[in-house]
Length: 138
Image (tube, rainbow, N blue to C red; front, side, top):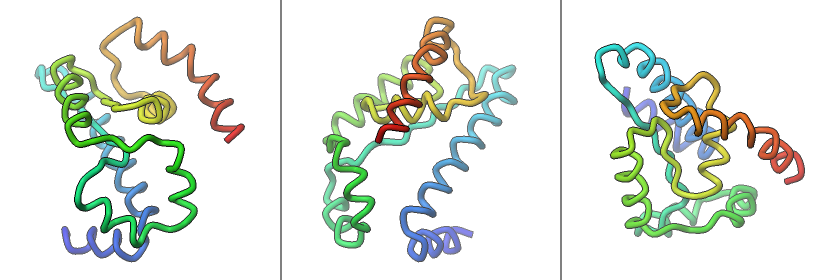
């Protein structure tokens, strides 16, 4: 099965990565709903472009459109991503974002995913419309 997924990523590129990422998020959301009664908590993190040795190699095959879309997103160093991840895990967050882009995608894709904080749930509802307008204008 692993070879099939890797082959799909190589052939379809970023589309396959997007589909697989969404699948992981949805699967984690469903699992969280089933496991919460057993006090088992899951977290999902989708880090932004991270400054690693592999990124330079990946950039060689990245389509031009993808480069244009990601130009507004700040490249983060691996330590920042690690700090955000650890902070989110310690806080018990289901969806962990490292920057504003990640927060926006997290809020827009929240759907029925669990939210353990009432203030954050209210904030998600309030800013969803704003993020939707931003997405429309971009």
